[in-house]
Image (tube, rainbow, N blue to C red; front, side):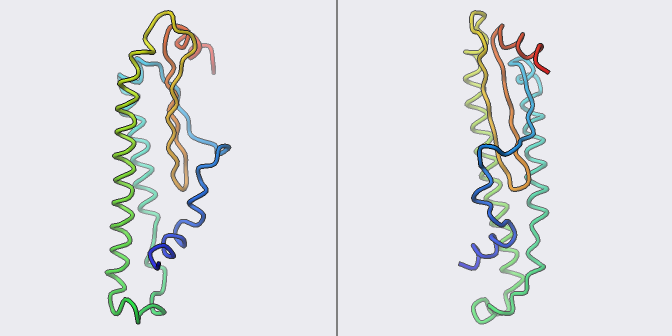
Length: 150
């Protein structure tokens, strides 16, 4: 229970950050640019943001004397446990993102057909502070669409 309370103090209302109208940092790629460095750059940006978010979580500012009867003199240990739990959850999200992008890579062959019109794939990941989105446009029409759109 105290873990949930502490997480709620560090990231208030984090359960409702994935709403539809939230503005995201968005990058548009062609299939070629995605395969030749776009995926790597997108993953680097997302992982850097995840590390910044973990670094901004500060459990040291909270006074744990009120729950000393429950945790004893282990306040610093409890804080380290919360930080380790946050890092494990973020690592799990990053592994999930890598798995999702691997599935997208397998699906990209369908976008290389010359007869396909305006096909696109979108991948979005939301953090507490920021949202990131990759839009991959494929096919001959998708490439022209990417060049014509600002």
